[in-house]
Image 1 (cartoon, rainbow, N blue to C red):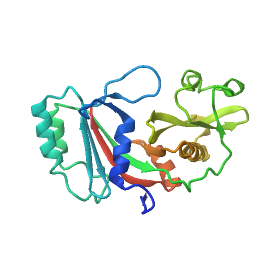
Image 2: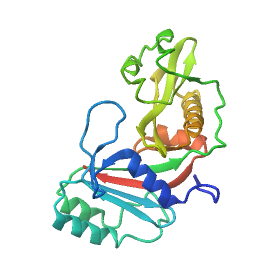
Image 3: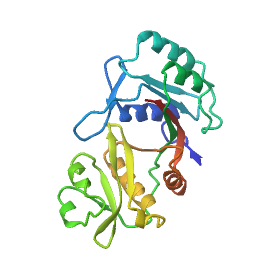
Image 4: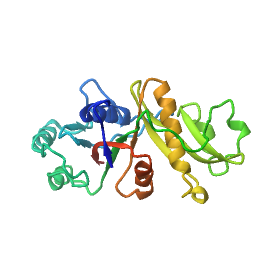
Length: 240
């Protein structure tokens, strides 16, 4: 697993870009909703903690978390270890965060930056509203409704059928988060890595950073990150 190099933004900056891409914020920097590019709004998690490989911490709370509770969470965040030596380690105050928020569910996983040098090893195609009708979308029928919102969208074709897709599922002017889908019957062929690389190149053309994050449980997604030798800048932790 690679880490960011001196020619890339520092880890804290990348984590800030990540949380801004993931959630919509109010003027007080409280998070309100998930930053999906298509119509509709879903509530953001109540607590977000991003720990980086350089020891920085980026955190957010939802707008409806009471001030007293926010203060208790802040005190715990400020006492998190300075250096993240093992990104798979739970936050130091994991149990306290869960207890304070009376939560029984959390999510966590690694966050990556895709390098400009990452290139697809297979031919990919940009999927846009002008060409989507020409493609076979069996298994990807839902893409028709989203195609105008989740650009760039890059696919890999098996014949004329879309077998794998990577698209922008969280978007800001500075960063895009990848959304990756590969049909079950086409997995294990390197298609996912190819579309992620192709998508990243299109995001860079827009002057934004291509970010890729996943969960610890999603081992197939982590294999894609490993195959592409993506730069890990930290790990996120959310309580819903």
